[in-house]
Image (cartoon, rainbow, N blue to C red; front, side, top):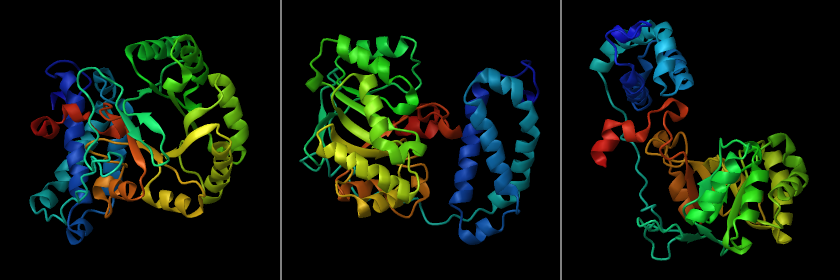
Length: 340
């Protein structure tokens, strides 16, 4: 409780963020996966209060200084919630066990053997996955999210290409496509050996997808991209309007493969129902907490099984991103470390 005060006396602040997030993550999982009758016995406003504290933790990430400066304002509320829930937790009744995907989703696809794609551990970054339309995409990609366009992105991509990376991932929203293009041009690597992946991010431009793509192509300084994605789902109508234009770009050879990002199975089904050219690539959050989607652990169906069935290759982002969405870094979770 020494850490409930805004003081460094008697508190090792470096351990506070992970300790509280670990407890809060498990508390939320206990509620989500309780027997329905037991969950119904919760005090009416407790779930909202837990979410409010979770959101507060998310804003502070895992930065000890942020916790030192701010945790005192939420500590009392967090402890009162735990105290109020103590009888409920003592009498805990679990619901159905967490669902584990049946498929060996390491995957039945894309590997022709039906087993997981193997990635070399000796520094070789050339392993590829074959998308459903035959395009080969290097498995290990270099992403430039949060790299500023002040020369940092340019130098980072240049170094990545020098190190052997051949899959560069950017997006309209990252604001650094121009520097990616300059690095590709200056690296001395033949264009056909580099897979450039980018995304249409601004959903207000989905109905003007072609115009935005043209602008992105000019920034990148290339004639085509290897994978072009919708960065997030919009309305069904806007998704379809954008997709029709992406299909035209694919037909013209200006995009080698089409994909989406941050789509769940229902949104993918909606798109598959209207798409003439199906998406062959999905980029979603993936970690031990989110195996394919943010709500995957508590879902009644498996997104990864759906992708295997429809031959869509999945790439995960923020695999071990610390404090992502308020959760712990997987490598700081004692359960993950024990399994590893």
